[in-house]
Length: 313
Image (tube, rainbow, N blue to C red; front, side, top):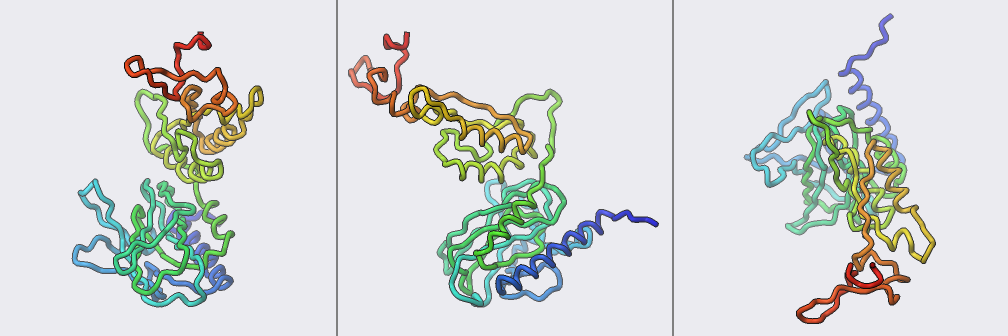
Protein backbone atom coordinates (compact mmCIF):
# COMPACT_ATOMS: atom_id res chain seq x y z
CA UNK A 1 0.00 0.00 0.00
CA UNK A 2 1.39 3.41 -0.98
CA UNK A 3 1.11 5.96 1.82
CA UNK A 4 3.09 8.73 0.08
CA UNK A 5 1.53 12.18 -0.25
CA UNK A 6 2.38 14.47 -3.16
CA UNK A 7 3.43 18.08 -2.61
CA UNK A 8 0.16 19.23 -4.18
CA UNK A 9 -1.90 16.96 -1.92
CA UNK A 10 0.01 18.11 1.16
CA UNK A 11 -0.69 21.77 0.40
CA UNK A 12 -4.37 20.96 -0.09
CA UNK A 13 -4.48 19.06 3.22
CA UNK A 14 -2.79 21.91 5.12
CA UNK A 15 -5.10 24.46 3.50
CA UNK A 16 -8.08 22.33 4.44
CA UNK A 17 -6.96 22.15 8.06
CA UNK A 18 -6.54 25.92 8.25
CA UNK A 19 -9.95 26.45 6.65
CA UNK A 20 -11.54 24.11 9.18
CA UNK A 21 -9.71 25.68 12.15
CA UNK A 22 -10.61 29.17 10.93
CA UNK A 23 -14.24 28.16 10.54
CA UNK A 24 -14.28 26.72 14.07
CA UNK A 25 -12.62 29.85 15.43
CA UNK A 26 -15.09 32.10 13.64
CA UNK A 27 -18.00 30.13 15.02
CA UNK A 28 -16.55 30.57 18.50
CA UNK A 29 -15.69 34.28 18.26
CA UNK A 30 -18.53 35.46 16.06
CA UNK A 31 -18.83 36.23 12.39
CA UNK A 32 -16.56 38.79 10.78
CA UNK A 33 -15.85 39.92 7.23
CA UNK A 34 -14.24 37.68 4.61
CA UNK A 35 -12.88 37.48 1.09
CA UNK A 36 -11.93 34.15 -0.51
CA UNK A 37 -9.77 33.65 -3.59
CA UNK A 38 -11.61 30.41 -4.40
CA UNK A 39 -15.20 30.08 -5.55
CA UNK A 40 -16.62 30.67 -2.07
CA UNK A 41 -18.93 33.69 -1.93
CA UNK A 42 -17.38 36.85 -0.48
CA UNK A 43 -18.79 37.94 2.85
CA UNK A 44 -18.49 41.68 3.27
CA UNK A 45 -15.12 42.20 1.51
CA UNK A 46 -14.52 42.36 -2.25
CA UNK A 47 -11.41 42.77 -4.37
CA UNK A 48 -11.28 45.92 -6.48
CA UNK A 49 -10.80 45.41 -10.18
CA UNK A 50 -9.17 48.29 -12.06
CA UNK A 51 -7.95 49.06 -15.58
CA UNK A 52 -4.31 48.63 -14.58
CA UNK A 53 -5.02 45.02 -13.57
CA UNK A 54 -2.30 44.68 -10.92
CA UNK A 55 -3.22 41.09 -10.03
CA UNK A 56 -4.30 37.83 -11.57
CA UNK A 57 -6.19 34.78 -10.34
CA UNK A 58 -3.77 31.85 -10.31
CA UNK A 59 -4.17 28.21 -9.27
CA UNK A 60 -0.98 26.92 -7.57
CA UNK A 61 -0.84 23.21 -6.70
CA UNK A 62 -4.63 23.18 -6.68
CA UNK A 63 -4.90 26.23 -4.42
CA UNK A 64 -6.75 29.24 -5.83
CA UNK A 65 -4.84 32.46 -5.17
CA UNK A 66 -4.74 36.16 -5.98
CA UNK A 67 -1.26 36.91 -7.33
CA UNK A 68 0.06 40.44 -7.91
CA UNK A 69 1.57 40.97 -11.33
CA UNK A 70 5.27 41.92 -11.67
CA UNK A 71 6.08 45.58 -12.15
CA UNK A 72 9.24 47.54 -12.94
CA UNK A 73 8.87 50.36 -10.40
CA UNK A 74 11.38 49.30 -7.76
CA UNK A 75 10.83 52.46 -5.68
CA UNK A 76 7.23 51.70 -4.73
CA UNK A 77 5.22 48.69 -3.64
CA UNK A 78 2.13 47.78 -5.65
CA UNK A 79 -0.55 46.05 -3.62
CA UNK A 80 -3.89 44.31 -4.01
CA UNK A 81 -6.81 46.51 -2.98
CA UNK A 82 -9.92 45.25 -1.19
CA UNK A 83 -13.04 47.12 -0.07
CA UNK A 84 -15.35 46.53 2.89
CA UNK A 85 -18.91 46.32 1.59
CA UNK A 86 -21.00 45.95 4.74
CA UNK A 87 -21.06 47.03 8.35
CA UNK A 88 -19.34 45.09 11.12
CA UNK A 89 -21.81 42.47 12.42
CA UNK A 90 -21.37 43.26 16.10
CA UNK A 91 -20.46 45.83 18.70
CA UNK A 92 -17.50 48.18 18.10
CA UNK A 93 -14.31 46.47 19.26
CA UNK A 94 -10.67 46.00 18.23
CA UNK A 95 -10.32 43.65 15.26
CA UNK A 96 -7.69 41.52 13.57
CA UNK A 97 -7.06 41.52 9.83
CA UNK A 98 -5.93 38.03 8.83
CA UNK A 99 -4.09 37.62 5.53
CA UNK A 100 -3.90 33.96 4.54
CA UNK A 101 -1.39 33.21 1.78
CA UNK A 102 0.72 30.59 0.08
CA UNK A 103 4.18 31.50 1.38
CA UNK A 104 6.29 32.23 -1.70
CA UNK A 105 9.20 34.65 -2.08
CA UNK A 106 10.86 36.71 0.65
CA UNK A 107 9.22 39.97 1.65
CA UNK A 108 7.74 42.08 4.41
CA UNK A 109 3.96 41.91 4.33
CA UNK A 110 2.04 45.08 5.04
CA UNK A 111 -1.58 46.18 5.17
CA UNK A 112 -2.75 49.78 4.96
CA UNK A 113 -6.32 50.95 5.45
CA UNK A 114 -8.10 54.13 4.39
CA UNK A 115 -11.64 55.49 4.62
CA UNK A 116 -12.84 58.46 2.57
CA UNK A 117 -9.23 59.37 1.80
CA UNK A 118 -8.07 59.26 5.42
CA UNK A 119 -5.57 56.69 6.66
CA UNK A 120 -6.75 54.33 9.39
CA UNK A 121 -4.34 52.87 11.98
CA UNK A 122 -3.15 49.32 11.29
CA UNK A 123 -0.53 47.58 13.45
CA UNK A 124 1.42 44.43 12.45
CA UNK A 125 1.07 41.72 15.10
CA UNK A 126 2.53 38.41 13.92
CA UNK A 127 3.58 36.44 10.85
CA UNK A 128 4.08 39.51 8.66
CA UNK A 129 7.01 38.14 6.67
CA UNK A 130 7.08 35.93 3.59
CA UNK A 131 9.84 33.30 3.85
CA UNK A 132 9.37 31.16 0.73
CA UNK A 133 8.43 28.09 2.77
CA UNK A 134 5.73 26.95 0.35
CA UNK A 135 3.33 26.55 3.29
CA UNK A 136 -0.08 28.07 3.84
CA UNK A 137 0.53 30.78 6.44
CA UNK A 138 -1.24 33.75 7.98
CA UNK A 139 -0.16 37.33 8.61
CA UNK A 140 -1.94 39.13 11.45
CA UNK A 141 -2.65 42.87 11.80
CA UNK A 142 -4.81 44.79 14.23
CA UNK A 143 -7.12 47.80 14.10
CA UNK A 144 -8.51 49.60 17.18
CA UNK A 145 -12.06 49.41 15.80
CA UNK A 146 -13.93 47.67 12.96
CA UNK A 147 -13.53 49.14 9.47
CA UNK A 148 -16.69 50.93 8.27
CA UNK A 149 -18.22 50.12 4.87
CA UNK A 150 -16.17 51.75 2.14
CA UNK A 151 -12.86 51.10 3.91
CA UNK A 152 -10.12 50.05 1.52
CA UNK A 153 -7.30 47.66 2.43
CA UNK A 154 -4.11 47.51 0.37
CA UNK A 155 -2.05 44.35 0.87
CA UNK A 156 1.58 44.31 -0.25
CA UNK A 157 4.35 41.71 0.02
CA UNK A 158 2.11 38.67 -0.58
CA UNK A 159 2.81 36.61 -3.69
CA UNK A 160 -0.25 34.36 -3.53
CA UNK A 161 -3.15 35.49 -1.34
CA UNK A 162 -5.83 32.92 -0.55
CA UNK A 163 -8.06 34.73 1.93
CA UNK A 164 -8.58 38.02 3.80
CA UNK A 165 -10.70 38.05 6.93
CA UNK A 166 -11.56 40.58 9.61
CA UNK A 167 -12.33 38.97 12.97
CA UNK A 168 -12.74 40.12 16.58
CA UNK A 169 -9.42 41.08 18.17
CA UNK A 170 -10.03 39.50 21.56
CA UNK A 171 -8.56 36.13 20.57
CA UNK A 172 -5.01 35.64 21.93
CA UNK A 173 -5.11 32.02 20.78
CA UNK A 174 -5.17 33.29 17.20
CA UNK A 175 -1.93 35.22 17.78
CA UNK A 176 -0.31 32.10 19.26
CA UNK A 177 -1.42 30.03 16.27
CA UNK A 178 0.00 32.53 13.75
CA UNK A 179 3.31 32.72 15.64
CA UNK A 180 3.49 28.91 15.60
CA UNK A 181 3.21 28.99 11.80
CA UNK A 182 6.45 31.00 11.39
CA UNK A 183 8.90 28.47 9.91
CA UNK A 184 12.61 28.08 10.59
CA UNK A 185 14.09 29.94 7.64
CA UNK A 186 16.83 28.53 5.45
CA UNK A 187 19.35 30.74 3.61
CA UNK A 188 18.26 31.32 0.03
CA UNK A 189 21.71 32.41 -1.14
CA UNK A 190 25.31 31.64 -0.37
CA UNK A 191 28.62 33.33 -1.17
CA UNK A 192 31.54 31.68 -2.93
CA UNK A 193 33.75 33.23 -0.26
CA UNK A 194 31.70 33.13 2.95
CA UNK A 195 31.93 36.16 5.23
CA UNK A 196 30.03 37.36 8.27
CA UNK A 197 27.00 39.40 7.16
CA UNK A 198 25.52 41.45 9.99
CA UNK A 199 22.17 43.22 10.29
CA UNK A 200 19.91 44.51 13.07
CA UNK A 201 16.94 42.17 12.42
CA UNK A 202 14.60 44.30 14.49
CA UNK A 203 17.07 45.16 17.26
CA UNK A 204 17.38 48.92 17.76
CA UNK A 205 21.17 49.47 17.61
CA UNK A 206 21.04 52.06 20.37
CA UNK A 207 19.09 49.69 22.58
CA UNK A 208 16.27 52.21 23.11
CA UNK A 209 13.51 49.63 22.65
CA UNK A 210 12.16 47.73 25.63
CA UNK A 211 12.97 44.05 25.78
CA UNK A 212 9.50 42.76 24.87
CA UNK A 213 9.38 44.97 21.76
CA UNK A 214 12.90 43.91 20.81
CA UNK A 215 12.14 40.19 21.09
CA UNK A 216 8.88 40.64 19.18
CA UNK A 217 10.71 42.36 16.31
CA UNK A 218 13.45 39.71 16.32
CA UNK A 219 10.87 36.91 16.20
CA UNK A 220 9.44 38.37 13.02
CA UNK A 221 12.53 39.74 11.27
CA UNK A 222 15.30 37.27 12.18
CA UNK A 223 13.91 34.60 9.82
CA UNK A 224 14.02 37.16 6.98
CA UNK A 225 17.63 38.03 7.82
CA UNK A 226 18.63 34.37 7.74
CA UNK A 227 16.73 33.72 4.51
CA UNK A 228 18.62 36.60 2.89
CA UNK A 229 21.96 35.13 3.90
CA UNK A 230 22.80 37.23 6.98
CA UNK A 231 24.73 35.38 9.67
CA UNK A 232 24.57 37.66 12.73
CA UNK A 233 22.50 40.26 14.57
CA UNK A 234 24.19 43.40 15.86
CA UNK A 235 23.27 45.51 18.86
CA UNK A 236 24.88 48.19 20.98
CA UNK A 237 25.82 47.01 24.46
CA UNK A 238 25.19 49.99 26.69
CA UNK A 239 27.14 50.46 29.91
CA UNK A 240 24.06 51.74 31.77
CA UNK A 241 22.19 48.55 30.85
CA UNK A 242 24.80 46.12 32.15
CA UNK A 243 26.08 48.06 35.21
CA UNK A 244 23.16 50.18 36.47
CA UNK A 245 24.87 50.40 39.87
CA UNK A 246 28.59 50.37 40.52
CA UNK A 247 29.90 46.77 40.59
CA UNK A 248 26.39 45.31 40.04
CA UNK A 249 26.17 43.73 36.60
CA UNK A 250 23.00 42.57 34.87
CA UNK A 251 23.28 40.91 31.45
CA UNK A 252 19.68 39.66 31.25
CA UNK A 253 18.69 42.11 28.47
CA UNK A 254 21.46 40.89 26.17
CA UNK A 255 21.13 37.26 27.26
CA UNK A 256 17.57 37.37 25.93
CA UNK A 257 18.74 38.87 22.62
CA UNK A 258 21.41 36.18 22.24
CA UNK A 259 18.91 33.41 22.99
CA UNK A 260 16.45 34.75 20.41
CA UNK A 261 19.19 35.10 17.79
CA UNK A 262 20.33 31.53 18.40
CA UNK A 263 16.76 30.29 17.89
CA UNK A 264 17.09 31.51 14.32
CA UNK A 265 20.63 30.16 13.85
CA UNK A 266 22.15 33.64 13.97
CA UNK A 267 25.18 34.83 15.92
CA UNK A 268 25.41 37.97 18.06
CA UNK A 269 27.64 40.89 17.05
CA UNK A 270 27.95 43.22 20.10
CA UNK A 271 29.18 46.80 19.85
CA UNK A 272 30.38 48.02 23.26
CA UNK A 273 29.28 51.60 23.98
CA UNK A 274 30.80 53.11 27.12
CA UNK A 275 31.67 56.73 26.25
CA UNK A 276 28.56 58.28 24.71
CA UNK A 277 26.42 60.18 27.20
CA UNK A 278 23.25 58.18 26.54
CA UNK A 279 25.08 54.98 27.52
CA UNK A 280 26.54 56.23 30.82
CA UNK A 281 25.05 54.87 34.05
CA UNK A 282 23.77 57.62 36.37
CA UNK A 283 26.22 56.70 39.12
CA UNK A 284 29.09 57.53 36.76
CA UNK A 285 27.48 60.30 34.71
CA UNK A 286 26.85 62.38 37.86
CA UNK A 287 30.29 61.75 39.33
CA UNK A 288 33.50 63.77 39.12
CA UNK A 289 34.98 60.99 37.01
CA UNK A 290 32.80 61.98 34.06
CA UNK A 291 34.79 64.55 32.08
CA UNK A 292 33.51 65.71 28.69
CA UNK A 293 35.36 67.01 25.68
CA UNK A 294 36.10 70.74 25.64
CA UNK A 295 36.14 72.76 22.42
CA UNK A 296 39.61 74.38 22.20
CA UNK A 297 38.24 77.34 20.21
CA UNK A 298 35.17 78.24 22.27
CA UNK A 299 35.90 76.57 25.59
CA UNK A 300 32.49 74.84 25.59
CA UNK A 301 32.17 71.39 27.12
CA UNK A 302 29.92 68.60 25.80
CA UNK A 303 28.71 65.42 27.44
CA UNK A 304 30.81 62.95 25.47
CA UNK A 305 33.70 61.61 27.52
CA UNK A 306 37.11 62.92 26.62
CA UNK A 307 39.99 60.52 26.17
CA UNK A 308 42.46 63.21 27.23
CA UNK A 309 41.40 63.67 30.86
CA UNK A 310 43.87 62.60 33.54
CA UNK A 311 41.40 60.03 34.85
CA UNK A 312 41.54 58.24 31.49
CA UNK A 313 45.30 57.78 31.61
